[in-house]
Image (tube, rainbow, N blue to C red; front, side):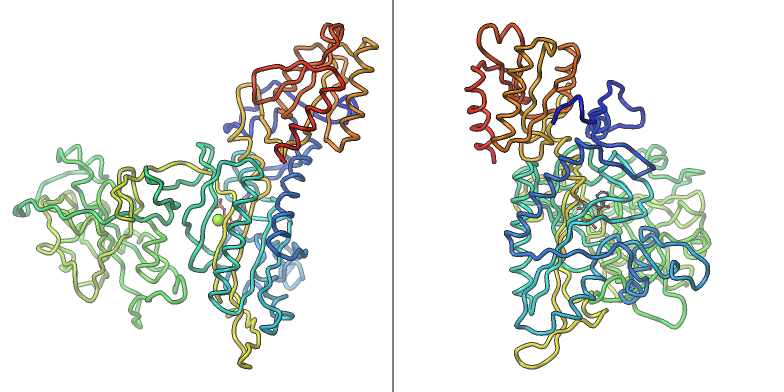
Length: 596
Ligand code: ATP
Ligand code: MG
């Protein structure tokens, strides 16, 4: 491709709203252009890189035995109602608007494709003889993301490779999952991503086991918990740690203190001269909907309103709502002030676990493990403007009983210890999720009655797995991982072009002829070559070259040519090598072959 006839709108300006490096560089290098919030066009250079990612993904899916198909973006809403996901997805599920009863109001835009693929499986995967089958597509997804962010890392329209496996039994699913997991490792390695696989939360997709593939970078929105000795890695949405040890200090008598207007942990700590780790946060929740997931023990149901759930975590810890929902068997949300007042007899901000029974109201108590081993904690006194000191589990509130559960319901923090028992401390790191694999089980096949006839002649639900990769995110994550002050440093495998030829003095006949010849020869050798034939200053061209980050650069200039050489430089290396024009073609071919 000749630069002068191509479209690469580079710019020096750092766009104001672009904070993370990949976003800034993708705009500055002319890879993408924003059309609306969270909606981007891929300009020619960006599209070439995206297509390279796509090719790697397709090759590895095919190699893993997955079968490509293509499903529609428009789905009948009725399909999503069958699985209850119109509700679970909330505003993420985009609906077409139209007059009442119109087909538009019955149509949603696919944020993922479990429902349509299960509809296909229900129709055609009817016998154990056909199984296992893994189907995949590379296709656009639509999601009503509330806060599109960081360029193409979080958008409302994006390209996903989504695959779905169908098996006879759990062992089959394990094997399909492993095959996809390994294919993912190959995909991310080939794309030049420094990734790690971590245990993950399944979220509204459902299912029991899942892993996310993460690229560690501050540009990410996720936090992963990694142990220093690398024996454990999990998304903090799910991460667990070794239980904390019992504090054995002697129990002191409870003491009531007047704490006028001091509500938050920080205010109370400053006032009482204590530390957040010595405080109990008492939070009151109520149920929104249930059950959250099939198979978890559900709250004891009564005819009237379900009882509020009081949750205790240490002052320096946060409730992990995924864990809490699982433990409670319901989907919980913070209670409105009137319920808190009714239960505690105090304004919001003064709740404590030790005198809750005085209201006579029924409630469930969930005590985080870290609270259960505390001694002489400070907490609200269930009395407006008062706190209590020296509150002790067992003595002052129960750890056992019908309505009491002690469990891990908090998010891990820096310094917690590995759940493997190795004693290695956990560190939290920011990361970008580039891929996610789930064992779904029968969630969708049950809801949509997708069964097959097994060898015993009995109909059984298909056992499913699903596997997603964000192609745009791979591209941005690769830039996050590989750039410097000058611009992008593309991994050769996904670079829009492999080689850039710069003609330094394009008005010189010799220079242009040599550059042109190299361009033709490299093209003929099957390489992707960009030829900067623009009539611009050398400095300007070098700056652009660094910005767009093509891995190999050949410079043809008058001075070097007079010595019979051209210059070869790798984008990631400072040194320049000199070659005769004929030899450079061979050298470039070698370098490309060595990395592909
Ligand atoms: P997140 O937690 O970041 O919102 P998710 O868990 O909802 O993502 P999945 O449903 O697992 O995402 O989708 C599979 C893959 O699709 C993700 O691993 C990610 O690479 C990509 N992806 C998801 N949402 C977006 C988005 N809004 N923009 C770009 N890529 C996305
Ligand atoms: Mg995910």
